[in-house]
Image (tube, rainbow, N blue to C red):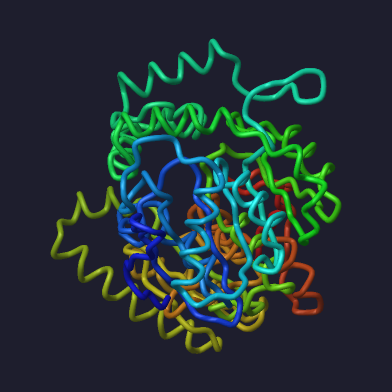
Length: 440
């Protein structure tokens, strides 16, 4: 991912930090939510790198810090939307973009809407995630948002716990309960803004209302939301989409407000480009084989490190030879097993059936899983659902067993292999049940 580093645009006396990632004819500008920090976006220990890489596929991504947040200049008041729009103008001019696709997130949504209504010639498309036209309720037509009591509670939590993971449950739901998450999120908060600035920005957020301009936004718009979003309820997002004349609504898989995943990134990029984004990897149909030495921990304890290392060397040498014999290619040794790819399921299954007894007579018992599906190559690594399914099938095999999916069975018709049904199985981390068969 091409990274131009952090630069500053200038709006009058205010300096606005931004960086440009990726390259392409389309410019996609990320309008961040409450807080951000352009400097940490690509840090390996931060959760943004993969999301940014996905957003920058096929286009030039501009990420920036709004005034009062991150590396941009501080403010003495909650900036009104017209100041925010002037800042966006400055960033667009600084990167040389006459027009751009906008991606407005959470608090960045209303400003993106107003900008598209006011300057339609500078907005090619508008993607909105986790946002509403206003964040306080007003009956009868807008029941969603924060009451005055809840507003006070949030301000108190900012005052007392900012930088310690304040409001993590609101933004991240169950993820906030994971060990170490509050400390991790607290670091992001400290990078994003000071406690006083956040109180000011939160007050400003709850004063926003752009319902009056929704009918004036004729830019192609995609509104995205999740059913579990507590910050911007999905019904409020649906109402937003229905009030805009050229908008459509897309419900994303369940997750918290703060979840920035590939599903969201792909939806935004596809909409901005008007077509699926170019993939950086190679997607092919392959058969995956996962082997695993049974009882490896007990064996290394029994024979010692030196003997176990020799046993592993013998395993690796024989397994590599058999994979090559059947036309496969080893992707990697997994410590006490192997991950290999084959062009056809029959060859993979026959390789596994020969590998089991050949290693057993050398004192090494293994189990094997085989599955056929679409895999994605990214450099030297292979990923995709098929890889996970193959690994899970291998993990459920018993000593000396070769297990395979129904896809392998169906594609092996006429091979002479026997497939005994074990029924539909629930595999860890896989949404749908998978039919599994014992191969002989």
